[in-house]
Length: 289
Image: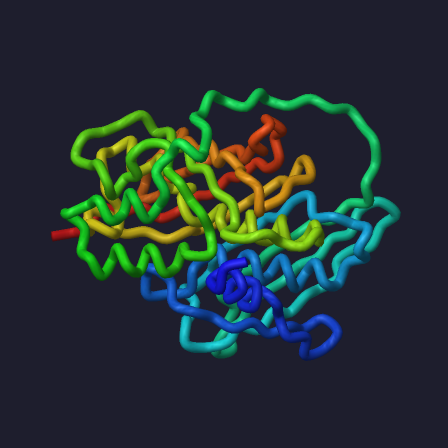
């Protein structure tokens, strides 16, 4: 297991202060605020630690309320909404400096048999044939070297590979609003199902709004032609998966309007099983002169 992955796992291992109160640390992201995927993942950890081990996360719905301060710890208050015979519901609110910055509702289910169908996995190249993130980023002369190094540092724990050029790699002309990314952790994980769901949640916020940028030929904040932030985030966990094995993140944007853009995606295992569905809306604005 890489040192970067050990560091990420340590970041997601919250300190329990009281029965329903947890504290997590923060670290700098590519942008000057706490990375949204970190807050979502930590909130899911907090909620999951108040749920029986035989109940697995099947959905989450969350709102990003305020930018997080990377220099301060985050306190997570968990409310035990419901404990039913099949489903358990929790609400977790992340607080910094006395104010909520993030709110998450998550539902957990006791496993049961049922109907089974899925949307087929779309065509995608073998992940081992796709350039690594480091290979792509170090090949862009138009990017500030400091930005490149920050990208590499913040994604060191995750092997994340764009199938095609990312928005900041090729921009200026609109492209189809679709993006595919292969990802897995840079090291093996233990078998705790919550850990794999939490790490997929962490990664899910990294690239989901890319397809909005592609539709308008924008390169993103890395080249300064848009500003933005996540507004809300929803995930449904359909089937078991491992975050330390290749997962295909197939993303698209059906709409952008009024300073907001919508991204939707499906995450598939390498053998074609639909594991997760994801939807996120974000602020996407063209900077004023």
